[in-house]
Length: 193
Image (cartoon, rainbow, N blue to C red; front, side):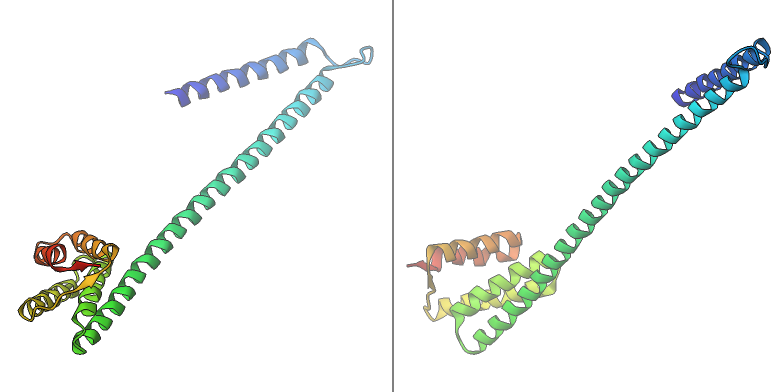
């Protein structure tokens, strides 16, 4: 509605300007007695209109430049954010694989306390990458096997309070029902030094 009313107003204004110019041309015919004539008035009006149109074009170019700059800046920020997220995601996958391989090696060498910690770190990083990975279940099952072995053989894990709290937080962040046994083990069985 607003655009159509503006269009009507501009049309009426241009028609009235046209009638004004025509009436001036009829009222003031060209004579050499006057210092000005209707042709001079028309040239003056046209000069004013050319200057006005030039100013409008300049303003439009300036505002277009400003809008383009803002749009390019938004696009750069979006791409930057996406790249950061992608790098972080891939970093979680790489970290998960690294911790998993280390835990596998430590399990073969019967270093159960280190394997326990690295399986938790692997599960946490895999979960940060993709919570539906089957490798998370593998890590949890290995952790449960380590817990059974440690309980059967009366082996304890001792660590600093911050380390115990970090492992507990990693397991809680997994947000999985099958990790509750591991959470209980960390709370009750790990000794802080």
